[in-house]
Length: 396
Image 1 (cartoon, rainbow, N blue to C red):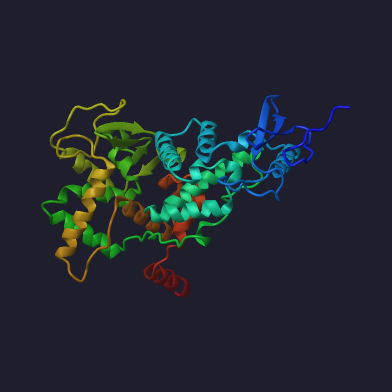
Image 2 (tube, one colour):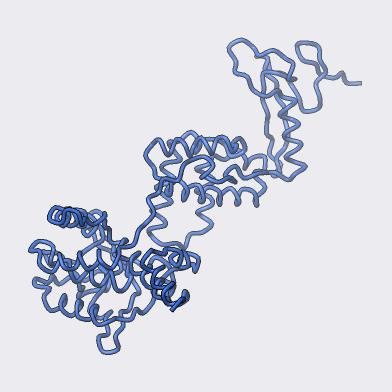
């Protein structure tokens, strides 16, 4: 009979086990594709001492038990070695038909993961505590609560891909961010009627910011996204029937314009024009002044232009609004306006429509919301003024 192999301590080695000349133990097995693979450890059992100068790692017998468990559970023993950033990349590759903004967002998260400890960990070894530490680290690096939550949601989704592919047993992102980080998000506040009137009155007479009056009127009374407003062309406006056709938005990045699809498929819509919007658009078109003959991805004759005659873009408005409000507040002590962004105006429109009892489905359509849940959230933004109106009507 052939003698059983032993290690340098005289212990019998199991089938597949061996000990190298340097003292390291090895276990040879075949993966699901029939290729030879090896497990290595400097210790045969958990009771073996750690060789001098070597790190504490699982013993060979413990690694064998994990391997057998993986095989019994159908876990891909090779796939589980994949790094987190590689898993995220694989997950994204399964959903290639996405918008350019989504592609850019994915790339940004990939770049973050490639330089982060968590992103370079094998997915088999990632535990909930590791992902929570990642969230805390992201916060310390200056990322907002909402951004971290969005990234966490994306990574949680890619682990479901790993679960379905039998690469892991559990999802380490299956926890609530609010249990780890304080939600310090500044919740949006709609402008009151008094604040809207004060802002518009100021714009009508101010020499510097008067040129933004029409754009702000349109934003306040249509709920357009700022990129949708900037992308408006004269052919998108039907003054006779009273509708604004929204089917694209404009983007400006690194000195180049591009036309993108609306944020969601629901973003394609026709928005009714009330009188003040119609007048603002007609005035803007009439007084555009210098107009550059530009064609951006088949679109031309844009309504809102900058001083050079080129289309306005979102960041131009976003960078101007703080200075505009700063000037207003300088001359209106005791009646200051809060920080206003283009999205504040969209938020104000949606809140006003909800308070005035526009049906949720109609408001969802006008806003271009993909999910009715987002629209319904505005019906909870009650104010003292709206409460007074409703109570008076109820008890009248």
